[in-house]
Image (cartoon, rainbow, N blue to C red; front, side, top):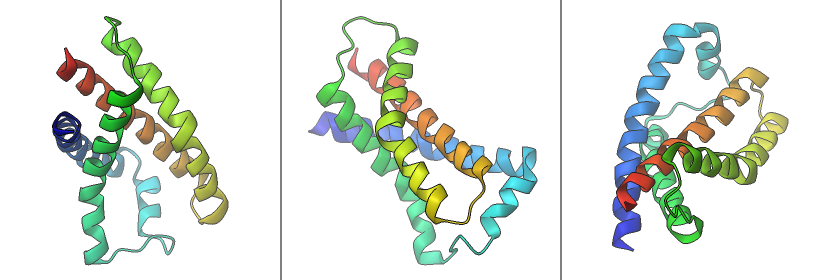
Length: 135
């Protein structure tokens, strides 16, 4: 249990840094898409904004549990295992959730696709971290 929690915290810290960097990159590279985040579909209240910073630690710990419970690395390459883990996570959790979001919330398809890619990146990066920590 300590291993799962520690791996989740490490992955969460790295994911938090990458998500903040990614947010600023998106505002710089895709300002039109970034402006969608200031639309009426999104709530920006200070008490809720803290969840943005908590999310990477929740997802990191959840993915750590999944990795340690179900994934067998047995000497395979980091890249291959991480990509397979990312694809499995996207297929099982992220893609179905993005379908629900797109059908129920007024956001554009490009925004939903970026969230789908972000979920994939989170899982791949986390898996690479777990792989390295388990060796």
